[in-house]
Image (cartoon, rainbow, N blue to C red; front, top):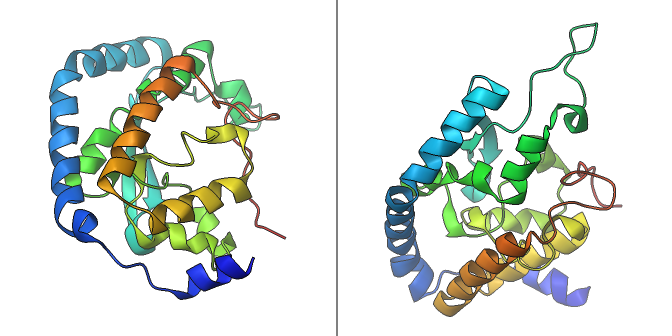
Length: 216
């Protein structure tokens, strides 16, 4: 606990890799991936339109570097089914088998490559979460916003949605304090393995992850 407090008091300092290499590397990797995966992205877009309707692209505001809000792009995975009162049904009732497949294979996240090219995100970093969580983080957890959010991250290859929020945030902050060239590429290769094996997709009680309501 004392170690956490010491870490929280020190300001994040960028090393040479983070200052001069990480952002250009992210841009090049995202651009190449977008070009190479363009047939997959096109086919996914067509299938989403056929099976889930329009809009094909899901847009949502997320906090990025230093908590600055940006618009995240993903493929839609849920229907717009509503109850008799006109209210949207719970997520688990709107998430179709096709939508679950998109999430389990991470195909729904391919459009985040655009966010990386724009500079909203990095290839590796803490995952961008919901804006409503901003006021719920403690000082330690809020440090995850000292770097750009990532397409994948240290927490995603060490449990993903199968670990607690607190464990996830601890891993995010660990990454913030240990950013390196070799570390990033290790996470990238571990991500490929995690996606292929479909590890940590769901928590014990949710299709993805329960809402975060603060740490006691």
